[in-house]
Amino acid sequence: MDVKDAKQAIIQAAISLRDAGLMFRGHHANLSARLSEDTMLMTRGGNVASLDEDSFAVIRTDGTVLEGEVMPTQAEIIQMHAAVYRARPTVGGIIHTHAPHATAFAIAHEPIPVVYEPLMRFGVTEPTPVIAWAPRGSDASVQGIVNAVEKNSGVSAVLLANHGVLAFSNTPSETAQLLATLDEAAELILHARLIGGEKPLPEQAFRQIEERKREFASAKA
Image 1 (tube, one colour):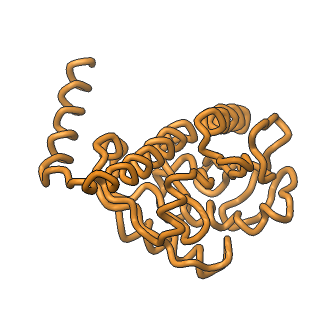
Image 2: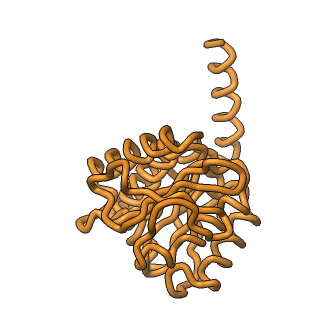
């Protein structure tokens, strides 16, 4: 993805997050898109409700800022994005925000279980794990994220204890959709716990969903 296309992709993803209420009240988030194997485009400030062409910086995945400026409060989270790009080459977009229902699970130090079928259509087959609290962007926090990403191929997001959520997928748009679905799951689980609790999907559910996706993809082709 070139810089111009990446900017537009992130701007559209941010609009969808804002309109869905996934930035919560402060409109705080940070978004990035992979430009190449070792470079990314990232939002330069914390409030992303109204991004424009000047709202970004080009950064190497070792943390070096190549173009633009990053606000001091954002500089500490560069490695939070960069480490995921280094650990998972297929990731093309990353979003960190305080989506309200997912963040409730982060504050409770409770993983989000895979009981909402739409999550499985994003390849999520394992509970969204909680990363032990450490200062945002610190070595300890980043290492916790990396450990979860490397050890669990069925994980496409992590909960940052007492803080928020970090989601990652193929593109910024897909990541925004994933984040919306994860927050939906969290909200529905909280409601379900008022009427007896969430119930697990059948063990064969993921295999059956993958088979149907392949069946309909091949029929469309």
